[in-house]
Image (cartoon, rainbow, N blue to C red; front, side, top):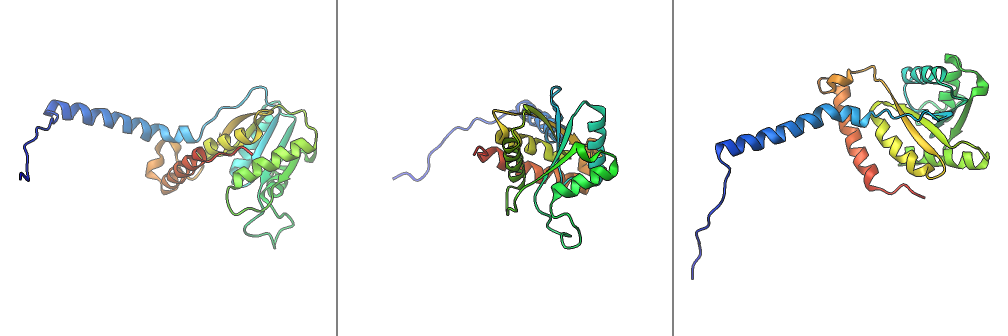
Length: 216
């Protein structure tokens, strides 16, 4: 009875190892430098007549949304958002949609240009809840809207775009615009703790969003 046997194993040469390491190094570098623009995607629709703003984004991002609205030929701005997790007892506004709407009015938009479309309270999938609330509002209002641009914050853009596209398809086309972060340089996100957290969190969340079916 034999317990061992001789086998031959092919191994790369020094040149082979050099080629393999170089190849994977190039791939890793491309991913490293392109991951932020991939997540913080900008792909607006020129024919979109409505700008939809996720209400949870920071105030400086809301100012960027106002600039986008005023520079383009939008006829209406819609804010979305779930109920506030903190501060609702101190404010008359109970959700991010209403809070963003009043903030945009104070920044400079006219009240008649803005509509707040809040969603119900949920324990998970808040972006999806906001997208469904928007779809239901559009259906109830018998809106003739066929294309929107979604404005959200930084690396959240790719995920929001995916979810809103699936929630609003096939009747409404969705473009995407991401705001520019102010707490780190997106060109060197890896040297800022805020940038690293943003990238890691959104990579995980985006993979989850890709795996889950959002059609309902």
